[in-house]
Length: 284
Image 1: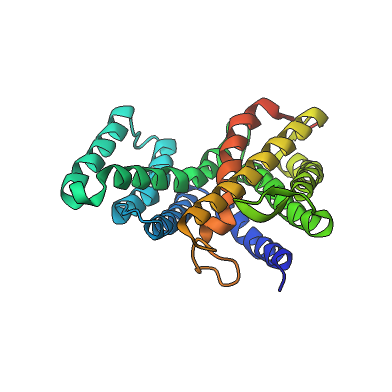
Image 2: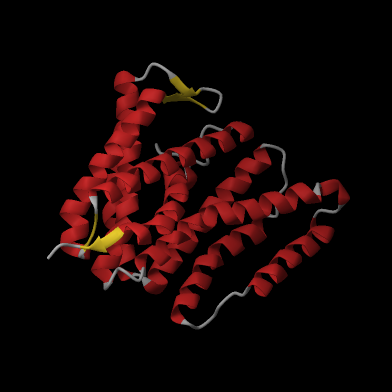
């Protein structure tokens, strides 16, 4: 089975499950995001260990798992993690390294990698505020808005691979990812534009009652495509440093969670940052 076929099958299989989880929202969505973040953190710490680091994996995995739950509690108005609370968690992590790692355990590297793993893995949590965005009224509109950057990212991913296979000649960044080409990257941007236009016309307008101007669609497609492809390269860089081919073998034939979510980890925060400036009410 070719890589393109695997990517398409994964997208087709993952889409209905993702849509259902996002539609239910609330604790179901928070729990799913916590699970994804925990597994992603575990994979990151596993790679870091292969590269010679010794992160405090159990604590980092637990912290990555509960952050989406904190976000859920915040939206319910039950609990808000203040800056002081985040500082206390950070201080507790630094304090624990005294006993858990000591001088010989490379404490600076241990703390740095642990915190990086938590932050990197929990970028997926940006799905939650997209689901409950102020402009998305109701579960259907919120789901449509979440699936917007996901759909554009999938389109970019598939387009970049297909264009790269058919037309790729000039290597994009061979030291990081030998298989990626300039032509593939350009094809990914082109595919993202087509995916963006199609999604707005077929899903976002009729279901979410939201739209973008032509210029807004162009800006969103380019931003998400560039962010997604950068996220793909970033994870390839981490794997190169660790000397591994895949982040794990959790998904047979697909690698690990990070291998499948690498583009989204960059695309989702960018989408949340810019979407509020680009959305307009759908024409009546």
